[in-house]
Image (cartoon, rainbow, N blue to C red; front, top):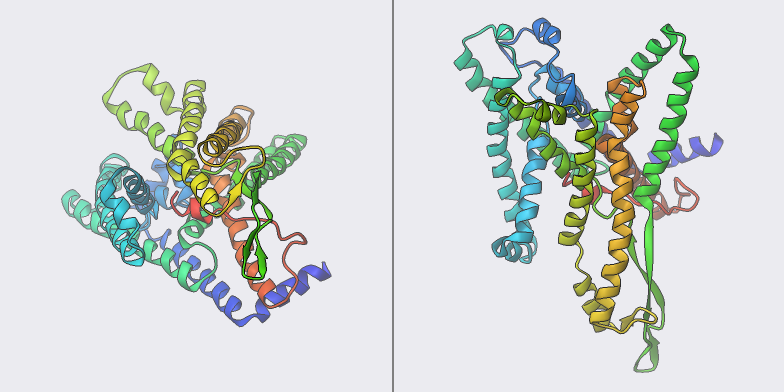
Length: 436
């Protein structure tokens, strides 16, 4: 305990780190306050009675937004349109040569891509806000003219998304951690205390003390498993030949290519979840029990298709972000080789084979993590508390926390303080979550 307080004292003794932590906390407080400001012209009492966004697929979305979706607040769409725009732009940089050239232009190209992402975010927000207002908000909760309410709310929701995007960028620049990821995480974490209190009171009221203890223990091991999945790396040894330059000898070292077991991060779940939202949108227009089964996230057809999509998208996302041929060419150019494998084509094939096997185990584990909330619900855990047993919520929380700890640890080590962890061997996931 003494070591813990010493570490906290060291953290706040570094002025730059202290200012960044305070800035982050203040910006997160502003974000959370905005989630409680209801759209003008709505009756909050009727909204609460209607219970919008508290069940089914929309309940998952409400978890990411920290309850702003069900409250119909000015941040009801949150940062989600920006994430959708980022995914679209990222796919276009892989598929379209124009965006590939733009990405290779350095800082100017990245600025143009960021500008396009912001413009696309506005367009997506307008479309999503129209759908949100027309299909989710009950008519009896609107206290003003419907047309005036729709037009004004679209403007407010779009402005709210732009403001949250600005908050995320400010956290990245002036705070600690990745801003976009931090906003998503704080929305998820804000639901945890309420869900835990409701679950404990429900179990204690029914006398199910042992069952609640088992829930907490299982949740602990699930979190440990997700941390292992996030940190697991398959090391491919690489030997570099010795080179004599003048009177000095360079190279001759053995290094490793770190192939992450979960190289795609949360992106496969995000892609798969986007597809699984479609049945919920077409149910009002199609009378089919088969389609209705896919709208229930606890049903076996939904989870089977969800798991298969995650495995497919894991391979897809890894294929567009990891190029074995380029790695093999870089190794050959720098005098590196894998022991027992010829440089060039055979090296690329070997890396691709190892990567495919690693991805298979990682994708299956990721699919199991994704369907864990549904399994928890079927075993008797309350729906809101079950969301923390896996899925995107848990992966984002673990990734953001690890990334933030890594940045804080870097500040401590630069000032010659003892790090947060003895080994210091923990890695964040900000590069994947930021695009999630």
